[in-house]
Amino acid sequence: MAVPVTDPTQIERAVEAFLTDRIAAVEATARQHDHRGLYSDIVLTVAITRGKDTPIGRAAFRTDVVVNVLLSFADAGGEEARRDGINPLVQGIRRALARKRLELDITDILPRGWEDVTTEELWEQNRIAYNIEFDTSFSWRCEDPGETVPDLLTIGIDYFLKPGDDIADAGDIIQTTP
Image (cartoon, one colour):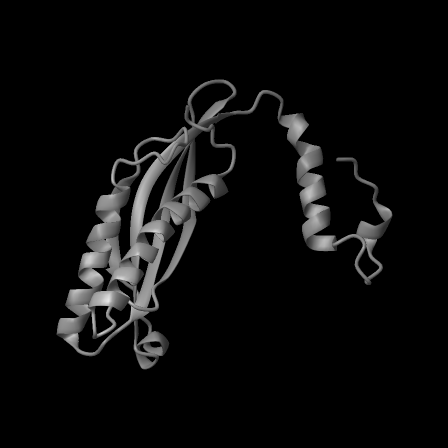
């Protein structure tokens, strides 16, 4: 049974866990077979950077999100090495995630596009970076908007005011209930 999504972070974590397992296998194989080290030192970051809510009923919404997978790895040198390294990884990630739901109550994850986002700083470090985008969506309900206010207040106090730290601020005075 699919897990209902209440927070986009669930999608980020599921995608990251799914890809991390596969990238670890790629790195292990590369260490054994690829003397050039094309697939060594792979860095993978997953983030949802955009979302759009659409009402689908009085208290229900659909949230469409863009999932970004930032992939970076060491370049073994030269344009041919770049092609041999990054292109198969980008395509492999796109194929691995296409139409997956990762046991979440979401629509199929669909490839949206990819882009070379290598900065001058990364290039000087002999690294290549690509951003791979995917679309998916999830639905959620808000029965009583007032019931989320204490949760938001607690999050705000804990994040911004950090009650219990060594700095005396309003967060040390305000009492919250779990």
